[in-house]
Length: 155
Ligand SMILES: [Zn+2]
Image (tube, rainbow, N blue to C red):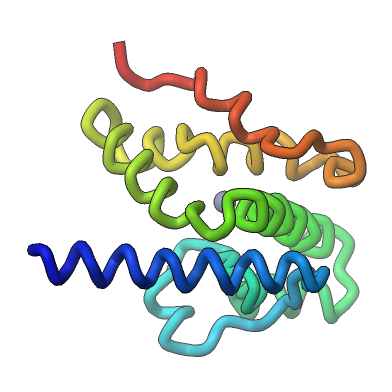
């Protein structure tokens, strides 16, 4: 138990340092197509952000951006905007995002089903509320996700 905890703390410390350095160097996110193992693992999810590695999307999203299609293109750009909001959140929280995300999900899951718990996480609530706003990242306040904790699915 002690060893697991120590490993977790070390991993988090490493991620925090990596995130801080990448962020200070001004690294933004590159969009990648998910490798096959990730496509299988995250079936049903359009994208995932792993800063500073980048944004990973399912091939459908990538295709919709690469090949002109009005409807699908709009959807795919929304996916990228959603993930870009997670990029900002991960930079601000210095990689604590993942631990926080997991803990908040587990907490909310005690009071709600998977769908409500997932959408209730402050990071997701901010991203879903603003991923249709094309200029959101231009006028977003730092740590804006903290304004979304009020969305409760308990009581
Ligand atoms: Zn999300």
